Amino acid sequence: MNRKKLPVVFCWHMHQPEYRDPRDGVYQQPWTYLHAIKDYVDMAAHLERYPKARAVVNFVPILLEQLDDYAHQIGSYVKGGSSNILRDILLIALIDPSKIIDPLQRMNVVRSLMRANEERLIRRFEPFQDLIDLARSISSNTDNGLYLSDALIADLAVWYHLAWMGETVRRDNPLIIRLTDKSFHFNHQDRLELLTLIGSLIGGVFSRYQVLAEQGRIELSMTPYAHPIMPLLLDVQAGKQVCPNEPQPNHESYPGGSERVQWHLQRGLAVFKRYFGVHPTGCWPSEGAISEQTIHELAKAGFAWVASGDQVLSNSLAKQNITDQVCRHRVWQFDHLSPALFFRDDGLSDLIGFDYQKWHADDAVTNFISHLESVHDSCRGEDAVVSIILDGENAWEFYPENGFWFLDALYKKLSEHPDIELTTFSTVVAQTLQRKTLQHVVAGSWVYGNLATWIGSDAKNRAWDLLIAARIAFDQAQEMAQEKDLKNSGWDAAMLDRNLQQLAICEGSDWFWWFGDYNPSDAVRDFDQLFRLQLTRLYELIEFPVPDALYQPLCLSSVHDSSVEAGGVMRRGQ
Image (cartoon, rainbow, N blue to C red; front, side, top):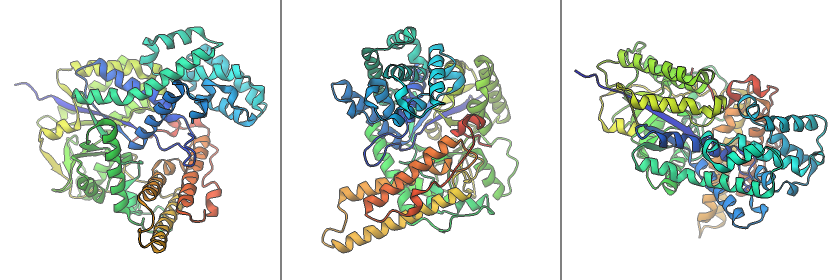
């Protein structure tokens, strides 16, 4: 009798927060479009290459909106617009560095063009390394960017984008091959063609993934609109379920938490359908953070499946005094209203996220498959499914050649394996596999099974108090507007939508992730500034005084980027 194949689901999570200045739309960080041309295109290409490969690809709606914005502004410029159309300073540096005339801004641009993985993205290309060495020599001695010529900035910008280019593009695209061979002295036409390609790659992300989904080769899923930690909006003290002794914010609740969670879910669904034409059936909650109330909110929004971290499963089983599960790789549910629950295999997911980057690709894939075969043996006779869930963008810059050889071998060997079946969560749900029931769901996330990454320390708690104060001010401002204009109920529809959107951005998880003196100092500074900028804009929109606290940094760090694993952008599940 043939053994039943082991279903394996890869869920790749694509996420960047809102980087635009809410006043003028100028991007404060370039990571959205850089990951698009490097990782979103590569991940699509690998799946396109192997027809039997299957995966879930999860997008955060606010990321989709920014990708669309980048594609449109680059397209407008290429069609004959002014460089003023471009709202990212690195794109201006690429196409027309002479427009950057402020000495300090020129120097800051060059320093930004040096922010790349030293081993994998800089040292790989000798001309890029030479330009970086020259720029470092100048920038270490002065902040005056006028010492940097337009030609140097242009060449550095070209190489920066060449280094960040997806490996599947680098290998096949004639323009990238030609510019790489040229090495230096890139003229305006070279740079215009490169910018045009960048815009095309970004704009093509939507159609490539949509086609894969229509062909049944991937499932597209979503995260709530601006990536909030839903358990904390619903109960700001939810983190105490796992960390009862951690200090908490001064405020004991988040006003209107359930309403705000549903806003993020419904706005996210609308944005998702606008770009992909379908209503997603599944949700990877922000950071895999769930609680019993969160599961009910997701069920209310119509999701058929939800995924989280393995340690959440452990904590939830422990609460009902179950500590030994021979086969944990199952489909779970909470109650009769619950969507299907899938829990991340932390060990296998973290091998891909953190460890295999140091291995030869074939050895890594062989090792990975051996682990899956062991799961298959231990779960014999069970309705098992293995969930591999991780960041689909940040891991690959630590691999040789953006993980090209690893991902190629992974999909090839798993597609051909006689006892393993690559599939999607929705396919598993449709197969009506027997579900196991959890009597309790302990609030937590995929990071250590708790919520301490976002709450419970001094800086994070102060940030929550600032957010909650802004939320209270929002409600007060809305009530005041209604009292002034009883006939029209205060804010008109456009104003209300604008203000709710700004509140949602402030509720995103990323600000809280980066608060902590254990994170790289540059990232702490950047996200601290962004959080305070977004909150300040919210106060401006609701016409309330901006608190003095928003003019002072919330958190400082002296940690160097290289001393933090993966630069702090990813963390292990355990």
